Structures are given as structure tokens and as C-alpha cells.
Length: 325
Image (cartoon, rainbow, N blue to C red; front, side, top):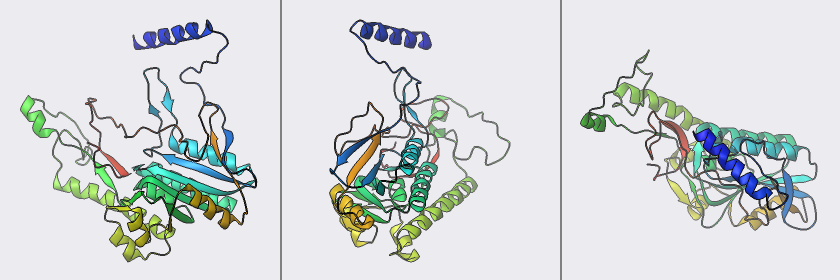
């Protein structure tokens, strides 16, 4: 029924618009159009590419409408932007504009590795510009940059890993629902919301968190040469920092806006002037330094067996999100 209804809606929209003249109608499931380039700052000189990390960091697309249309996956989009930039010898620096609470462990690491590989291959400076929020996975990605500029009102830090899960065992008992999950090993359903976690399971899952946390700290260690391993360990207790606190603790290099990041990128690349460019799909609006890309949804929707509203399945995340539940 849903497929028939969706098809009827599309047909009606097409007929209505066709009656008004010649139009272009992009149907759900179509391939995205190639990127176009827009200058958002400056009038002359070599190019500085601005890549934006906006919203929750995830490697998979997010379905957003009953018509079946999806947002692009952030990892795939950033990789495509960098691939295009590799073919443009006029790009002399990269600004990584980050406004994100973080996201999945793997997506954060993939984007970090893509930025770092691009920097190493192209031999150009990378400047991270932290906007309103660049926490956890957002800060992780910033470690690929040569220098970090934080907006004076930015919130950053939250260095750590979180395993998100809930326990419905007490509620299930009250309403007469019994867990009948079958497993082939005692740890197979560790973290299940259908029963209480055992001490052994808690220790095992904590060991996985510890490994991910160790990697996070090693990434910070490689990106912040001004900090010792002991200093990083002290700072990496999960807390967030204001921009001023981050500067005082050596987590960022300078306070300022996007213009400050541009000046730093020009100086690092030895440029007297530059044009800041962004890549975007033809129908995405771009006008200036603050025009945002299509937003990745503000929460990570993760399934469990029944799709109860607001409930997420267990997940390992580089994420600062106190209101996740």
C-alpha cells in the first residue's frame, strides 16, 4: 500500500507541475548530480577549499521523507569533495569547518583518515575551524588539521567513548513480556535492552570501550604535539570545554572566526590573497562563508526490535549528547 501511495503522490506532483510549464523533477532514488564550485569569499588568487562537517557524524545515509529520499552519507560526501579537489592544482589550502557533537566511532575515524591522507598527498596546510560545537568525534576529526581555530563561543572537548543502551527488563516484567532470545554464546546478546547486563558482560564491553578510548587519545597525541600523554589523559575525562578553556589547556591554537582561519590558511600556504570555494550539488544554495550544507539529522536513529519512539540500540559512539534519551 505504501509503494502504491508513494507512486500516486509522485505522479500527481508530476502532473501538476507539468501543467505549469517545463520543469525538472528529481525523483527519489536518483543519483546525486556532480558537484559545482562556488566562491564564497575573496575575489582573486589561488583557492582555499572549505569542507564542512555539519551535524551528527555517521557513515550511512539517513532516510528523511515518506517519499524515500535520503540525505547523503557524510563520509561519502567528504570523500567525493576531496577527490574533486585532488584534480585542482589551484587549491593551496583546506579549511575544515566543524559544527558537530560527534557521532559514530567508525565514521569519525574514516573522515579523520580521509582528511589526513589528502593533506599528506597534496602537501597543503589544513586549518580546522571549530564553530558552535566541535565535541568528541568533531574534535577527533580536527586532529587531522595543522592548526585549530575555535570560535570564541565554541564548545569542544568531550574526549571519550560512550556505549549507549537501555534496560527494559523491569518494565517487561511488569507488563508480562518475557525475553525469549536464543544465543550461541554467553556474550552474544551483551548489552541487550531485554535483560539486565551481567558483571562479566559489563567488563567485556568496557574492554572494547577502553580500546576505542586508547585510539582516541593516540589521535589527540598525534594531532596536539604541544601536549604530553599525561596531559591528554588528564584532559580526556569526557568533559566539554569552552573555547577559552580549550585554548588555555592547549586543545586549540587560537580563538577567532572563519576569517581568522582564512588568514591563517593564507599565511600557512604563503598566499597574499585567495578565493575560498566550496563544492555543492547544483540545487544546494551557497552564498557566503556561513551558508550551511544540507544538515545531517541531529540524532542517530538506531533500530532495536520494536521501533519504540526515542529508543536507540546499543552503540559505541564518539558523541557528546546528554539529551540522547
